[in-house]
Length: 210
Ligand SMILES: [Zn+2]
Image (cartoon, rainbow, N blue to C red; front, side):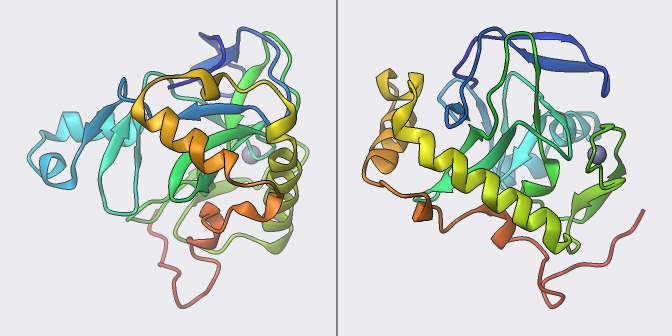
């Protein structure tokens, strides 16, 4: 679930987007998987109809075990995203890597998501650094990796200096993530940064079928 106030509105990137209902400082944990999100195990997924699978491909995120989580909001992709995915002690969350203004669209980089199958799409994010084609299962250029790394490190540095709505939430997953974050004090805390798991090594890469 999203921690700051959000609203859905028409996006300049594609379809509907998620917009900030309040200012979100860099370093804020913006999203985590809570008990309000729908969890579909790998086994349950296999028995869904094609239509249901399509919906999950569109609105869900897959974890490394092939399970899916479907959440209430579907942020658009941008190559110059203002939130990025991180893992803290194996727990997934998204962190604001820029100061996000009220009414600004919240965007994420889809290439940081895990995917058990290769996919790609043409990007129309119109960012200064738009990669043109984004996806998962193929190598990401070193410039992009450096950009992700430096933005995540800078944002992680701010975690304990900005207000974290996460820290006052009572549910089990929020408490586990809070504990994981509070036990860390430096930006070198994220050994599970997603891009270390995807095909930057040719041996791990998959052929892309369009
Ligand atoms: Zn783009």
